[in-house]
Image (cartoon, rainbow, N blue to C red):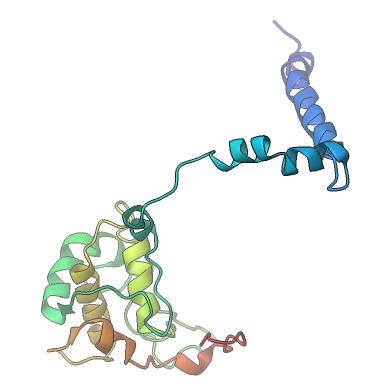
Length: 202
């Protein structure tokens, strides 16, 4: 039987040597003032070779990844969804983790908790904690359902947002949300966060 510490040392030694070599290479990288580096940067032939590395993305390819939604609603897509449709989608795709009524389970609780944030036992949900309805949409579209993120259509996400907001008493039973109406919603905890001081941010 091999001596375990000795065997471990023999197995790790090539890795440690490799890490040391990379570290030395990084430390010895020429600075901007190094003549060889300047020659590489300013030689048109070398510069052209560097510039052609990779493939430019098309507008369609970029659009597939550029899905973030800002608090003020910038980036919300076309489409709409109502509370009743959202209830069916939630039952089919969300209830397994979040509970049949959004009460929580494997996933977070989504409903209730209003007025508890300043208590000894705050309950953070969509209704009690979330500051913007628009970023609720953004999170659902980007990360849910857990086992298939980004599989929901824009209409489905609007419908789910409508259902959750309705269940939290924020929109009426007959609400249908789209980019305009979703951005107009003022969440109960809108003022519970420190405003972003950067120009152009909420």
